[in-house]
Length: 326
Image (cartoon, rainbow, N blue to C red; front, side):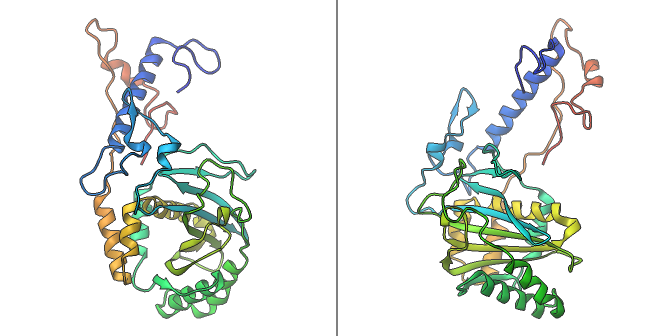
């Protein structure tokens, strides 16, 4: 929001601009309070930073985020994407927070993740008996890819002649997530964590996206950050022109996998249908805070009026501070 007494370039802030900033901060605080409110079915982990607040403001304290109740399962989640056969890590999630990795290798500041509703439904509708594999006894990434590809061919989603290209797309992956040493980012995995590895390949030989979810019978070292053993794999193959949509689907799954209750329930799933019921239950427990514009504050002496809001630079598309978001 910048300095409330002046803009970042040193220009004087008018009373109207200051009022809008204060209104935006008030709205943001209310949204954060709602997003951290305990829900009756899946409450946030007791003692986590998302429960704590000081003066009505949510405090993201890394020490409390790293503390997990005994018996609860937590995952480190890493997403890698391939364009023209070149793989790179783009995002990771841990302790209910997310980070993005720039092309120069630097990480963004940790922040609360967001999920696209459309992508969440694309994930749910895209998973079924044919592409959910539980307790897969693979001993390598290549073996897991071959099993996944064969099942996609059998279900009719993948043409048999495209199977070698699909396998080759994953075979080109090297360990890109810092597998030799723990990453120095704020969300680097702990020594006792397991990982979920989300692999997104943007290719030319498909005209529609394909996906598969895998729970491995035995964790594998697949080059995730800090050599974290991988328990879950998610493959998403999509047309090159739909890379942004593929990325949103991966982020939707990552947001779900951050929930420790979902991880515990999914580990108990003994079949693909059981897993899909767990996923459906998770969606049923999720809450969306809808977007709305707040009316301007009206003072008793007429210092602010509803008419002023007609030219408010917070309207959609104006580039102002109040913007639509999912």
